[in-house]
Length: 179
Image 1 (tube, rainbow, N blue to C red):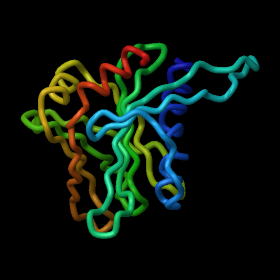
Image 2 (image 1 turned 45 degrees about the vertical axis):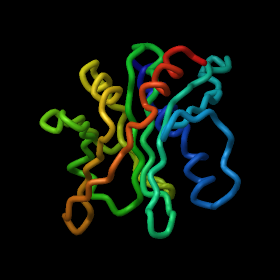
Image 3 (image 1 turned 30 degrees about the horizontal axis):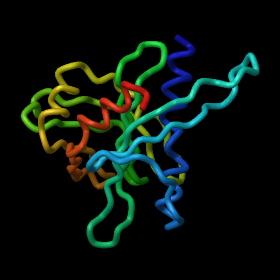
């Protein structure tokens, strides 16, 4: 259980440099893209035994404000190493209301949202706990074009942020194949 939690934490915070790169308008790292999704693989920190951890890969989509280009959200999907199941983690800017968490909604499956609690907040934003995605959600993401993340703001208004599923199927295949 401890290894699963550590793996999820690693996946959750692995993308923080990608967010920081975009936020600071530096040259973003290069990575393969599949439609609106990218894929990154990174070495994790050494474990308690001093051995280097395995490479962690995830696919992601950065969502920016159309008006000013600022990063608004990052959605990441990785494979939890021990469980070998897809896990989603979302990072949103500071200013979200934490207790209700966030909800991921796939087009056509709106009545079955993926509910995500927040894990932690850092200067880059607030990150959700890794949520395992079941086969029905993954299949919906492969077949549909749109999804959304719904979150409450501090003023209690609900914000729905669009997520494109263009290229998700190819990105997910690349993630699962390790290529």
